[in-house]
Length: 298
Image 1 (cartoon, rainbow, N blue to C red):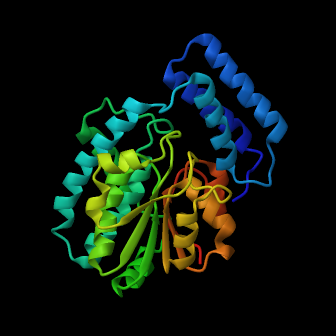
Image 2: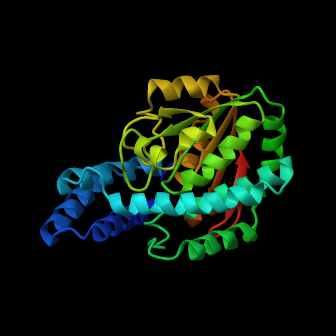
């Protein structure tokens, strides 16, 4: 999906929200916002995906603030919350059959897409049980489009090369359970993290915090500090994995932007699991408001 006119105020709001959350000195706040607005005035266009512009303004924030890992404490707390929720889900999923267990974990992985400390505002000062209840309510809303059965049928055959594109901190602890299930079916899984911290996207450090390697997947760096993966800045490892994968599973709206736009260049089957965060994306599926999706692109 390419950038829409409606993306402009969203990008600015995203940057302002991040500035406030970091509690920076007033002069630094003004400098970041001024340079971010200057970037958009000169570079905003409708020929790139929205996450490209968001990445650029957050790089401005990192450079001017001098903060190497923005939201460091929030990121760590989010991983702890996600891990505690995943521990509960692991026990519950063991009570279910293969398909029911897979479906259960897939729906929770989609709900886990809400574990974004900036856009959802849960704050992670809440008790784990309260956040788990919030995600449970999301699971109970169901899926507007549901291709999980199709994904299961492909994975259950085994011997597939699967590329699993991760999204946010915290969320990756729940993804770990779904990845482990995919490996148990006899598939080989490669999963990706960002090469540097930006907004709430997961890095190698976050993968280590949730012990992602226990899933049985190979972990690669998708590229530098980008919101979602970047088609322009993707690593050689990611390029190779995309070309070899039979099945690509992507998490999050930013990755939907990328894969919906470049799907013709990818040989494998693509499934996007995410919760929409804005009407321009939801409207693609004929609705307004936030919806849960398990979409097959090809």
